Image 1 (cartoon, chains in turn purple, cyan):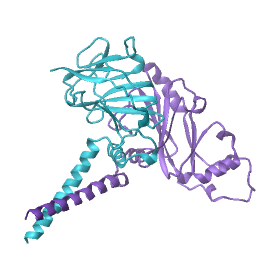
Image 2 (tube, each protein chain N blue to C red; image 1 turned 90 degrees about the vertical axis):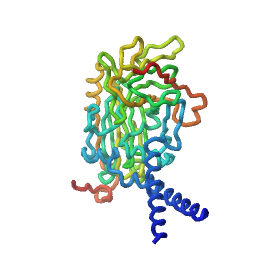
Image 3 (tube, rainbow over the protein chains, first blue to last red; image 1 turned 90 degrees about the horizontal axis):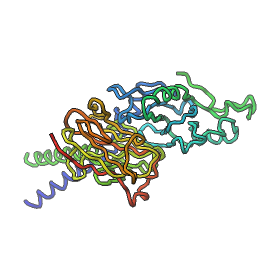
Image 4 (cartoon, rainbow over the protein chains, first blue to last red; image 1 turned 45 degrees about the vertical axis):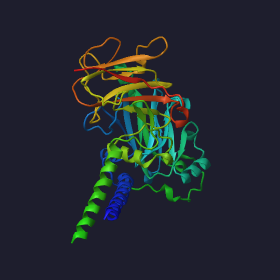
Length: 204
Length: 192
């Protein structure tokens, strides 16, 4: 009898372990309250949004009150991401995240080139095109290679006191966040009749 | 008949046990790669491939956005240095030193994730640039519902809360650099 009970307990434990592991591993696939889900419900892709304050309708939880936040969502189908911002004396940092909220790349005002926000996110194929075309905008930008299908960038700007609010807001307003295809802006690197599949622009 | 009841009990126990342990792991634990220094815990995001599934599940459930490795590192404390849960009805003294960073912020949050409402005349969040320090660079912060001299982290209300200390642009991001970590102690004072 004792062995039987031990056997049942063992069965329950194994089942519990399987349930535990599947829940943990399935949460990223089925979660609907994660940051990307909330951001994609409330913002358009390739448009930079400032996030105001810490209300209940805030797009991000876990907000640091000393920072101004902005987000920009990107979708691979519309091309790579080209994000650019003006110079600001205040400390800022940016994180590129994928749909699951995993960090792909992060930088801050000290590690950025010349202290400016200037990043290009491309997939490996577009990286090759970029190397071929060598556009002028790629010279000063940090080029990030990633195969993510969609994701978002979170930009944080330090506001040590209220006198910085205005400056941070002005900085945020000038941040651009656009789709980017390396071949298009280059002066005819290929023949004019050569169309690459990447140059189709999907509607909507 | 009897055996089917036993199978049912075993299945229920397994489901409940698995679900509740998963919930507990997400709510309370800080992931496998967490750094713990006294009451403080942080989960460094070394790189996308090295993040453990518990950390990802936790950030999905909370809807939070982690700080990237180059941005900084966020330390959370839900208890004082002696392991007692933080309560807004108590006074606390947060003193010591922080690892090298360009700047840091200390914020008191409610359990719901919003910053604690500050007491009149104070702020429930502090910035390293506005901290009064001792000559050796260390500092002492008084957390209280009543006005305090020096660095005052002003809180109001009651109930549990958590402290988040975010280090920005810090060298502390991989576990290898944490041989001699320094984080402030949280000492409980009078409770009312």
